[in-house]
Length: 610
Image 1: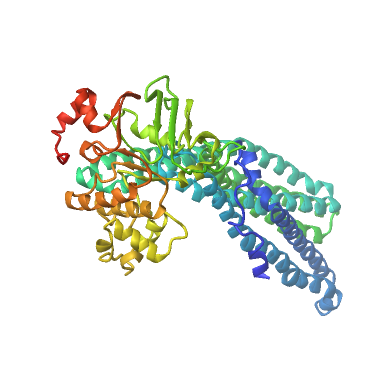
Image 2 (image 1 turned 60 degrees about the horizontal axis):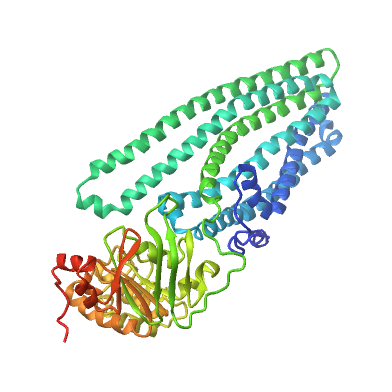
């Protein structure tokens, strides 16, 4: 039985069915509709529980009537059916419907829906374009994805199992009271109007406060994670006080919003207590008055009192749940700002996988400004022949990395086009573009997984032997074999820590180079690929890179000109335009921009030509 309910929803069984929509109700329905059968079952289970709870005071009232109308020796004879019915209700029927409610909620909805929402939110978010992650804290994004599953599911469940339960209980109870006397419904009806009016007045204030708290909490988490992620910088510059102030601002803002929120919650609690007292007093007075006038029997009085207490207790629970629902809805609304964003860069419906046979690259009158009016890349044209090795040279901000990012289609060009073997990259799938291009960057980031997994990231089907061979070519085996982590894993099984923090910059760079060697793509991009290596290791790896560059189209970026001086052609960029191009010797002879850059570096590392 448990297994059946636990397997109704497999959270990771499907991808996100489209983009999560903007708009709170539409966003909720996007996920709820995927498990609507379970939520409908929860609605009926809660209705059955309300029916069972409403029936208990009815049996108690009738039993009181029997007790007052018969002698003690006849109680079990005259009231046998009532006693048996009450026992059956509280020991069989109510436990069964409560168990059904629990199975639907605890075995199916809680694990299944919670993690389905998280999985689909992650599936959508990880496909966002690069700028999406550059414009937010990674910790805040992760926190929103994690929280959304719990808060969305909890708020929907609370509405059904508590709010809907109260509505059902109120309707059923009112029907029972009306059958005895319409006057008994009057206090309940007046209380209901006052209760709903009170909620309408107060709940929006609580909801707004919850939303404000959710945003403040998200900022709080983002700032803490930012400090922890950059702990090396904090320690190197001895700036814990600055980080204290950075986080203190967020804590103070969160505290101020919590204080305002809890003022409303205190008022809410006081108002509900008064309303509850009015309900009990009014219904009791009405029942006793009707009994004194002979309009109802003692059984109705005995039934009314526990019914009133039931409604009062449930309304207090609803009050607690509504505050939590408001907080949860605020969190969902805040998370929705991240999760419901359309994916910024998508493949056109007609996109086809890129096929690379030669590796010819062409930038044709390309302009790109990151959405601004000008700058970065201006009307740039560049042809790179198959197998040609190009070095991109220019000051910081000249557009070198932007040009590479456009080739990788992290962004779409604003005008012009980029082709690989004659195929427009804007009409190719992003995944296929990046499958055919290997990249080694200056700031190498490793996954918090094993060395083997990090290298094998270059090719999914790689065997252990192929991973080790790639590491050997990257001159990484020696230090890898000396590694161990806090769980006792060693060598290629050792985990590297968040972003590879357990490794030095040079070690991370060699792992990245091994990963690229294993990938074996026809186009290679080297962005300051050896910048983190010492001279001895760099010399050894340069030989590996020379082998890796054979029969590949290569684009290399380097500020240290000696590392790219031997390229087939150097392309000099300035303010997003090509100002010079040619071989190292040709550009020195030209005496222009490149020659000036070379002179300022003293020509330091270039071996004499033979």
